[in-house]
Length: 322
Image 1: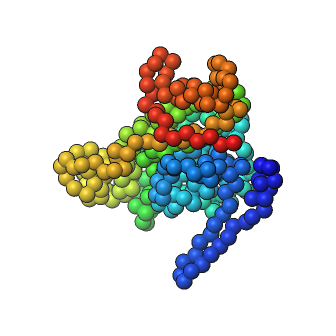
Image 2: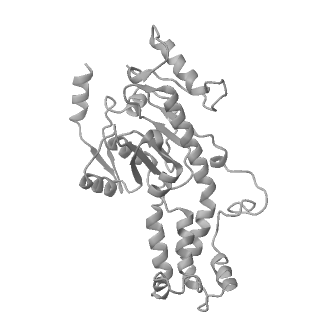
Image 3: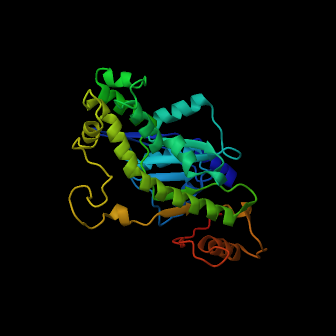
């Protein structure tokens, strides 16, 4: 019985082991409460979440986000979006403890079906326009009367600026190529989930495109305190961009070399989309006599737009969970 199994799993707690100088902890992941855990227990073949990857999750619970954080490790990050109408809401104290235990997880609360690039940029990072606005306050002429210039006059001004903007940017990486969609409340249409996935893939692409200019702006801000005291336009600009650090703003000079080189595996890797779809919550246009025919319409809707144009999504693996 599923209910008894769920309670039985819930009674088990974390198990900590140690061997020589190494320690680790195994935490139970209840497959009756998480679709991802259920898929893994049912021998899911293609699971794209790997250590040091960045995973974007829509509609998952905090428990699921914590397990994904354990998988990606300290070199990766997990971004979770909780729907403001159907998702779980936790107290500020619970979230504080959660962030303390999983510092590489970032949670956004909003309307999942209508999230935009601007909203994510405001929640997860600092827009490039805001960085340049701050930089104007450090300029010798434009920011002559700005209180921001007190930061430039302070001791260790460069360290202070780096500290401020590393905090505001939250350390979220732009190379998101793993999208997990678990948001499927009763009455959800498949075409709506398809549009959510496609809109987020577009957001990820825009995010990667703006990362280069954002890195340049952060570098200029962090080194603004090293400019000449007279605030001359030419000298200040040269000092801000000529600090010798690596920058991602030059597309013709890849990191680690110069000239045209072969793109790395991470650059050419195709993005993955993982859908957790409770068929009982899915609303389709026609009635289906069995689960197989219903799933065929779901896959067809995900692969093509109503006018027949391909979305770019292709079915890699389908797994039925009972």
